[in-house]
Length: 154
Image 1 (cartoon, rainbow, N blue to C red):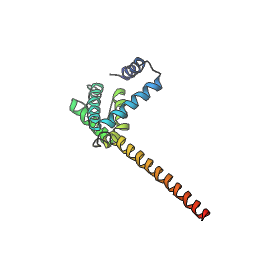
Image 2 (image 1 turned 120 degrees about the vertical axis):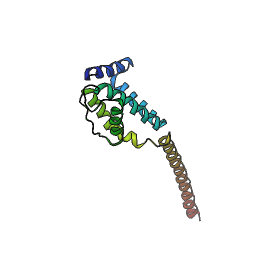
Image 3 (image 1 turned 30 degrees about the vertical axis):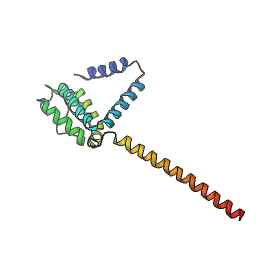
Image 4 (image 1 turned 45 degrees about the horizontal axis):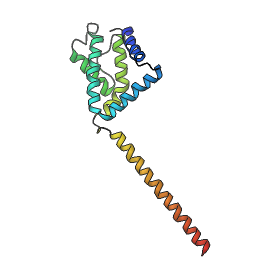
């Protein structure tokens, strides 16, 4: 798969959505983030397998270090975990795939063992705590105002 083919597939997917580019890119980003939050382990497994299949298709026959799907699997899993590999991409499509893996992979891999929806649950707990603190603050303000009224009246 060459660079034009990859770019064409991406553009066709975006155009098929019927939305402007900034909208479908934002939608794709939101979908990926939501999916990762719901199932971190499943998302990383899917990323490794899909990335390896794409990298193997792009580099097979053009890169002497990629002679099997296993080689592509090692490349992808290494890039996802630490952001680099001892295999270097030779084709434009392989370089694009590697760039995406190296950019987003380490952050994705860092969350692989998180509980599903942990970030959302933590945010909800913080919101409840903040609401409770606001309620306490309002009650303390009322008590302080009452104490000031008693001092003036007394």
